Amino acid sequence: MKLSLLGTGTSQGIPVIACTCDICRSVDFRDQRLRSSLLVEHKDTTLLVDTGPDFRQQMLTHRVDSLDAVLYTHEHKDHTAGLDDIRSFNFKQKKDMPLYGRPSVLNQLQRDYAYMFSENKYPGVASVVLYEIKNEPFTIGDIDVLPIEVMHHQLPVYGYRFGDMAYVTDAKTIAPAEKTKLHNLDVLIINALQRKPHISHLTLDEALNLIEELKPDKAYITHIGHYLGLHRTVQEELPQNVFLAYDGLILKA
Image 1: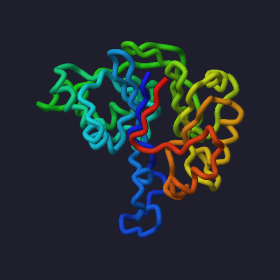
Image 2 (image 1 turned 90 degrees about the vertical axis):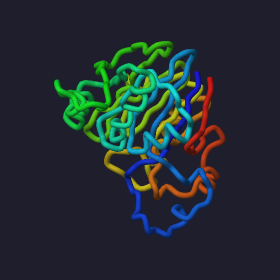
Image 3 (image 1 turned 45 degrees about the vertical axis):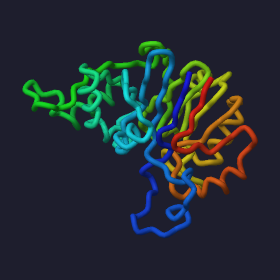
């Protein structure tokens, strides 16, 4: 199993373009974060988690030339707004793109991209097929997927476990029954927006406490807000088995 973090950032807390703070001026590529997204590859299957606003750039940067399906965590625009660019894969692969998500996500996509689902579609419009998922295991090609329901304030969001690796973004709380799905992990990828308390995202301290509770072999912080700090300084604060993720990081298990 190979997991590639295509984006580790978030729309939360992004400053204006003219900002001259240390983060914006950093020449360390690890501080230049696109919106969060994950590529999962196993045997003959390539699966993408979320199509955020940076979807097209991420596909070009990482030379993703084939894609079997898209799996959504939730319906917020920083995780869905790039869907229209899926048409390039339609043209190349000559087939509809399967989209997997909970009913609320699929309903939102049908509203936001109504032209994709029209009976009389405009020529060249992206072509997709929707698959509703529940909080139970399922399989996409060669990849077994276990959903983990977390709460993004009052919005249910799915994290996902792939074998001994798990990806959880936009979480604030996780019910005990769902935490059991995150035991015995080689790798846990978990969100931590910032240091200050936030209504719908884990803070760095909250994420570290959760990592200590779950005890994965290694953990990686993603969905990183602008004001968390520079990569090199934050990394110095973290336990030996916890790492600040960055765009382009590849993990294997």
